[in-house]
Image (cartoon, rainbow, N blue to C red; front, side, top):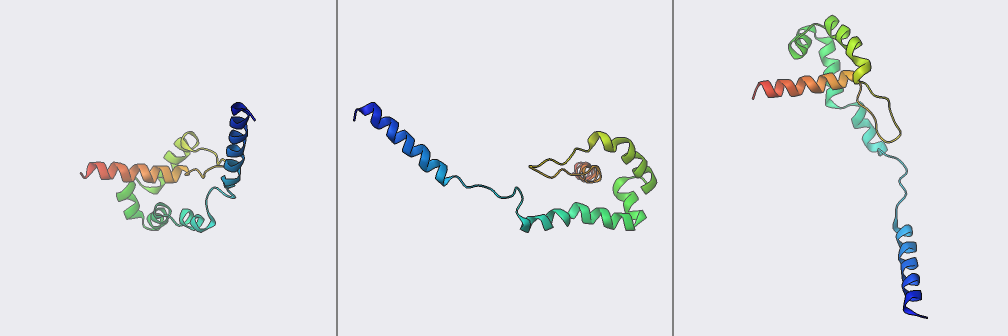
Length: 108
């Protein structure tokens, strides 16, 4: 066997072993963590704010009716579709995160 043939054989064996070591993923998000996505702090905060109109107004700086109108106007532009690889945050979640970040910046 010449050295070029040996190189080809070694490269073939390397690639074959590499394919064997590669793990096939069964899911993008493990089922243990799906619970965290459903019960994350932003979702829980939104539910609690919806129950308390005064706190809602303090947090978003507008009443619930104005928030719903604003969400209807801006929702389709900021909301994306779910794809196979990741879950997309809905427009309410994005607005809540944006408000949290703005409040954080204002108080610093």
